[in-house]
Image (cartoon, rainbow, N blue to C red):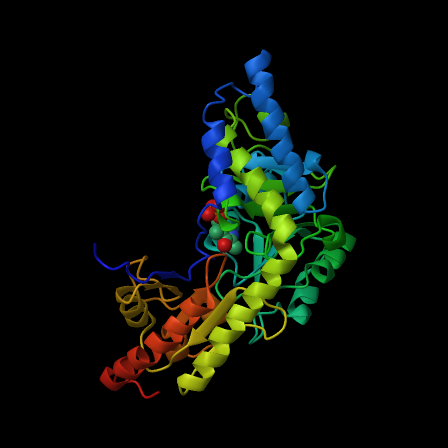
Amino acid sequence: MPEKETHVYLDYNATTPLRDEVRAAIIEDLAVYGNASSMHADGRRARARVEEARQAVGDLLSGSAKGVIFTSGGSESNNTVFQAMRRLAAGPDGAPKKDGRTGIITTEIEHPCVLNSARDLAEMGFDVTFLPVDQNGKVRMDAYRSALSEKTLFVSVMMANNEIGTIQDIAALAAPAREAGAFFHTDAVQAVGKVPVNVTELGVDYLTMSAHKIYGPKGVGALWVREGAPLFPLIQGGHQEDGYRAGTYNNGGILGFGTAAVLAREHLAVYGREMCALRNRLRDGLLERVPHIKINGHAGDTLPNTLNVSFPGAEGEAILLSLDLAGIEVSTGSACASGSLEPSHVLLAIGAGPEFAHGSIRFSLGWGVTEEGIDYVLQTLPPIIARLRAMSTVPA
Ligand SMILES: *Cc1c(COP(=O)(O)O)cnc(C)c1O
């Protein structure tokens, strides 16, 4: 038998493994084949499970279960809000009605599914503002106040950033939007299950979440909608989800999401403490062992599990691949996924210079990470950085 290879997964902001209880619930549910929209006993049984999951998801947000609409994930939830707002304000030609509200406010650091939805509406004639952020990733309130007007249709600001972990003060952003008569949406995919999220306290109209970021299955998520807030379906069809999201229920996925939501709520406080301790161990260890590094993001208002570090003089991708060879899985902002070496839009938005943006690594922690795993990273990474810097022409 070969020795078990070291494997330290530190990419929980990209996706999480299923928790054992979630996997068991999904496997058990595979035997329940009823269509949750059918009126007979099998259908009702399946439906009851969907409603239980809806309650669990509503409870995790301290909001009404009634406001929970199941979708295929965070991307669909975000698209649903943007397209519903377009539908609300557009004339028959698809362009916004000139005498109506035409303004959309979002930020430069949103997830691509929000950025591209916003760009799409800009092309249709909406007046889109991408708010700048400060060096810690916080929305610039002065820019926000001057962008907000009686022409603003809606505002969309993510609660926590997936790359650098910065948490926005959503309540303080939502209040003036609603005073101006605009709707407020937050992409809370990275916040839910990591920090307390209470839709009533936040004062939002729409909130996006995704199951696979909280140890649930991929391909399922939810949009929470305040009672009375306007909504139109992205997917037309039957009357599932009160007609707001058609398509036969993804029972197993929804059930797994519900189980994950129950666990997330139960373990929220412990999660915060444990991730914070592990993250700080990694951060302090790196600061001690690797010269000339920079921690990106906000020191206080940040996700407990996220650490984004710039290693100037080394390429993010080269670091990632070297770590991968050693069994350590992380991510980098300079995505070669896009086929280019474009630096992260988030790091550029916080004003990181090109070498800091190119040499950045995101470590995102979760259940299953141990102190031994962190210590293995602390032992493995410094020589990698030293080697890459020695090869580089860019001064550290
Ligand atoms: C992962 C993620 C999404 C997309 O969610 P999916 O369920 O994968 O579509 C949206 N926003 C943020 C901030 C994310 O991290």
